[in-house]
Image 1 (spheres, rainbow, N blue to C red):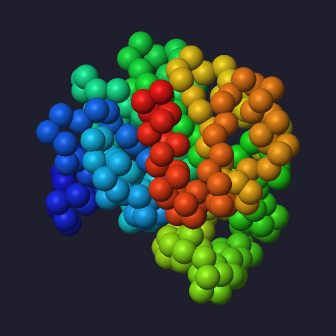
Image 2: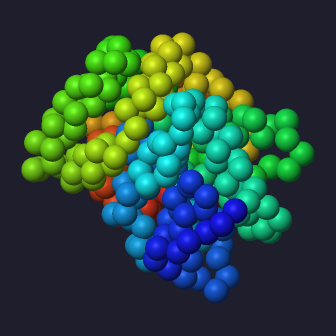
Length: 273
């Protein structure tokens, strides 16, 4: 696929926008960050250049319809996002001897899980470890997704997404996470956000995602913000499924923005544990 450089670490590969960082001569592993609903790779900027991540080779693609990646003719579903990631990983890392660690935030954690589930029957696994950060597990985890799914597609596209962005704009006076979320939401395809919201609500309603995560054949961990992130009910589902959950104190849904130092300590301990 043709590529055109924007910045040494920012590249378009076809319709997909990629953020990339590699400083180490001999990286320890590949780390793939996957953003959530309405977001883009911009949400990881707070930790992207942190020295604790310097030993790793970092990747973050904007999903189709999100961030700087192209909008598709029809909204991309969650399984299709997982397939999009698989294609990007095969393009970029096929044959790479390093382990690949996937860190998915919110919907990105669900997408990462779908990708890893499809790999259990694959001969060549592309992901060696999954770290699900604040991914949906029950209806209590649905906020923007519940709001979008509760509106018709026509209403969401006409006024709903703009109204949600207006709320984030006001919250951004005091909350950095809302500030970056606002920037990403303003360029997000409202059709894909509505489609993915409806999927997340239905998946969360079934409360099977924790059990499915527990059945993965690769190492998997869950990271949550404490006290403002994933609630006790969803954490209980993780406990029943045998999935280790790691809290990041003084944090909400974006622990890597709210308390980046502690988040990275937790993340590195998972990587190297």
